[in-house]
Length: 180
Length: 180
DNA sequence: AAGATACTTGACCAAATAGTCAATTATCTT
DNA sequence: AAGATAATTGACTATTTGGTCAAGTATCTT
Image (cartoon, rainbow over all chains, first blue to last red; front, side, top):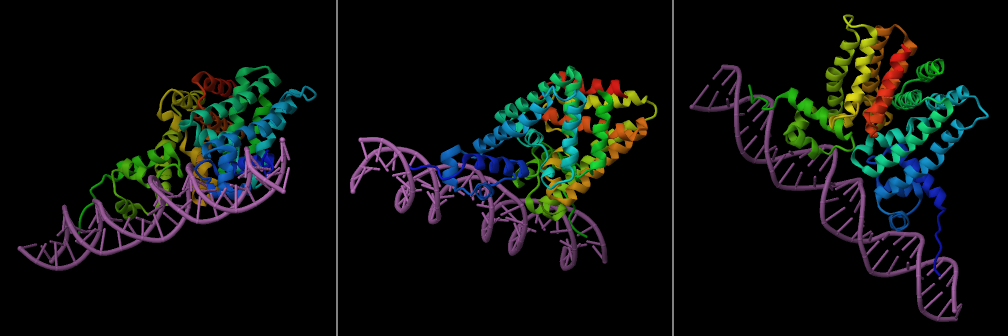
């Protein structure tokens, strides 16, 4: 019937997720988005909607990929619960050593910069966080500890963003492991 | 020799801290700052400098007041270490119940939105965080646990920003208290 | 081959942005 | 009282912002 889309939707969604992940909502301008995706404004609007809608797509993409990966790992009964928690808490340690690691956790970033002023963002962020919490509860069978590990994990990601070195982040993991 | 300043510097610094605390760096425009402080642009520039300098003043103000309050409490030997940690971890629980609580922790907010792209912000944030860490270490005499409590505290503040209710934040406190 | 249809492009817009500056106003020193 | 000095004001600017739209282009169906 008509012309095809020229872009690979998956690649564009990854680019969207990355650009908002790195720079936040207010820190990302439309020209940043155009450069990251290689698309013109008109195409972005036609395909996805306005800037808020693009941000939502980025959050959804993060949930589908990064959050789902973590959730599957935490629900993998082939590994002991201790190992699963160790893998989770090693993420921020690795992040402290790479450039992309300084992007932090998109859930934390969105919680801080948009959740308090945008209901949709709050829903997305809380939804993703609750998925991780549920997987943690599945792994260790303790809701109180699950919330606590979630907090320590997010706190570690914040400390990485603040520029703390990996030795300090390791302290967080080791205390968590000696607790469970 | 010349005309006096008409504004109360302390009040202006409090207003500055509050407006950046609530809206972040990119989320705060000059007109927001003018409204919050009651000053015109020219006066703000003459007295404090450009927007980045204003942000630094806000971070310094937060360190002088909020961070110092927490540090003094943690170093107060009239209270048992357990009570001091309990008081610290009750902060986020109270925050989950008020409008201002949704502002979160300015250290976390700045860590996420400016520290990765601005060296001065990173220095300020890390400096304040290290002051709390040192006070925690003083209180419980355990560096590993101190880093861990710091992370749990920041994580709790992030979860409050994400909109979690106080019952969930209480879980974080109770796990910390059963750990020390 | 020829419409019909949808994608793509880039020029365009109004509003908001951070920052500047000359003119005005108030207070101190002498 | 008068001049010197500094704070205050608000108009001004250049740039960037998110968002729109008409014109052009590619591909499908018939």
